[in-house]
Length: 68
Ligand SMILES: [Zn+2]
Image (tube, rainbow, N blue to C red; front, side, top):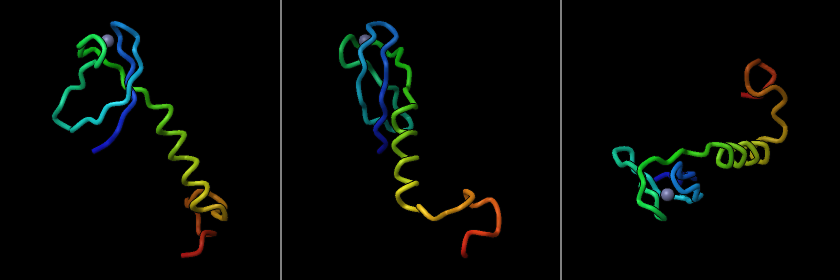
């Protein structure tokens, strides 16, 4: 179950919530369903993880120089 960071459009409360695919997240502060998903933090984290996992990958995997 993925953990996402949301910003409430009604009370501007930032919060992390576990969200199932068929569920609408609700603000834990004011109960609003007008939550905006924040993508910047998870994306930056994943990118740092990928750099650590494959430090010698020269070109991002789009050519033949990465060993098979
Ligand atoms: Zn709220």
